[in-house]
Length: 421
Ligand code: AMP
Ligand code: GLY
Image (tube, rainbow, N blue to C red; front, side, top):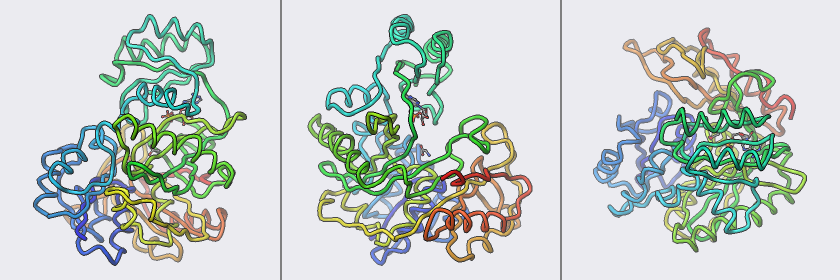
């Protein structure tokens, strides 16, 4: 099977590693990939957002399966275009990717199919949004409708903050076109977890739950990022909770999307709040989480490739995935300054030694080679260092042992990933 993976972060490195290890994979190309992915796949410098160029590449490579990592090309319709060219693709069509691309769509779909989520209103003008916020009362949450790169969600403690947040989205247009519409919703409380399932349009195969760390600093301080670490499994989602999540959230969404002519294929990633009334959806993503993928795939005991193909082409009900009885934890190494301004081009040493440690793996996120062949930082989040072990504490110990093998004075990481369980 000739496979093309689209993307160039740590998530795509984990995907490429898993796919390259499949006996079914005869050829693996990644667009654009990175310095770590280059060890397991042929990297082609094609941007994931350039739909035409990705489709041309897949046609030229005669790909049997294209696996799309990031959300932007999915929302832009890459999977529709690939399928129109007869190329099987893992990931949702543009119509199905609306689940992530529009929070108003996602909330309306939940309402239509009785999926538990926060009470909300959605608006195309600031005055109605403000009026609803004042009816609802503080605390509440204001969300820009469209994709805003993990930003665009504003937690408000007072109505003044809510008015300002609505202005930011709809009047000052701080999130651009993502703020054409706004969602105002009730603020829920409880522990959070992420849940992942593979979907073939009609049925879902549960994968696993994970916990991630969004804030940049230890103790959840500082601004939010794309994610500074993650672990899986999580004690927050036991077998009974997983069953509720499948029965009350994942299955009704999969059926609802199919019934509305937007059959969903790919990974459905639910961001959950585990409230006193049970699990409720905060958001859906239509792709693997980054860095959650870097703790899910290393725990698999089975070949992922046939299951990705089954999700893309139908038949997931006969697919099975066995898991290792191990925990995985990943720590993100980022360039100093991230998520603000940071330098690129600083040299990183010791990565091969870290990756060679027992029960450790290093996934590259933003890396490149300089003219001398040194590994250098090429992004904000630069490396994901994953440890594996019989339990969370030992996975954590392995991950930080590998982190401490890497020499990169211009980088930093959180020291408390997995520390509080
Ligand atoms: P989202 O991108 O929608 O997952 O939101 C990012 C973060 O904002 C979530 O991980 C939660 O911590 C928080 N959040 C989003 N919606 C709500 C809500 N309705 N109530 C409380 N917190 C929320
Ligand atoms: N780590 C959260 C995300 O991938 O959206």
